[in-house]
Length: 462
Ligand SMILES: Nc1ncnc2c1ncn2[C@@H]1O[C@H](COP(=O)(O)OP(=O)(O)OP(=O)(O)O)[C@@H](O)[C@H]1O
Image (cartoon, rainbow, N blue to C red; front, side, top):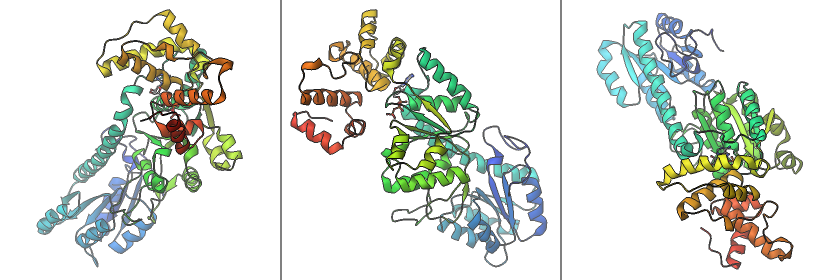
């Protein structure tokens, strides 16, 4: 159903900020001349342009296709444009609507602006006038998306803008693979222990890709309640389920043209895995409760700190989705295998965190680096970052609290098993910044078990 393409990122009335081709328009007017005039003006610019002579035909098209914008004549035969607009908004249509109106209907049109129209344009009008009105609508939608993305970005900003730090051979080869893969549209699966920088790598991949100007939307799968994941990802229409009081776009919508980063993909419930696979294969999705399919233009980068192949073998992860995701599989190496990166990382975090915390930097020495390189860092770079943060707060490096490499269970052979367990759990909690759910997940025990053990040792954990 796609029409001829022209104009690239910006049509004649466009700006470089958004892509006209990414938008779909439905023209509803009973005058054949007006329909073909508008269709001729829009088809070379927009990704999809359809026309309908009345509300009834328009409804049939909308049941099959997703439209970002309606250009709607107020004076339609049968149901009037305004009545229909009212019904559309009631049923949760969230797209833009530009009304076309004769001068006699001006008052009605102004009222309609309050009732959910985005703009109106008086007949007769020139091509540049309607293109301008459309451009404004598209730009507003574009800004809403950008705003959403920026808010999500803010939390991770300080940690991630500077990208991947480290000059070790392992990091150099990781960078080389990322650079190469970034240019391709393929789905990527990032594997590696927790805290090794999979999200940093995903962001770098996005920044180096042709989608760099479009959004990067991270999704932490286990952080979303199981019952809400589907609507969070795909969106929902009003009334789709109890509590769905209005139509809401999903994260796929916000990632349009860009990259969706699905972190901890192994935690996605099986039913959702099936739906995700369909979206990846058909490049279309259906918001919860909707009958309409929406085209999807999103690159997926998935990450897991579990061995996904083993999850497949255990029946917890769909094999077909695994194959679909693992078109390119990249492993982020643990910090203990690239200890030579530690000095660079320490300097990097020191710069970042002194600015953030407003405290003076601490003196660095080769002795300190040797000590840090001797430790195993089970929580990887995240643990190192937490260690530097704690050091800055304390005003000195608490190196005595660190064990040594291979001595993650510090204390050697003399320790009884329960003491080894206790030390390992406490260290993991430390590596996770005190986050019990995260520590329990990484230790492979339930949060309840972790809490019970901490209570036994009289440890109160935040
Ligand atoms: N190479 C790196 N350079 C700079 N910072 C890094 C690097 N690797 C990791 N970090 C930092 O370490 C922390 C953890 O990284 P990140 O969240 O990317 O790890 P992850 O592998 O995605 O972890 P998880 O599996 O737990 O989600 C972040 O603060 C990140 O900025």
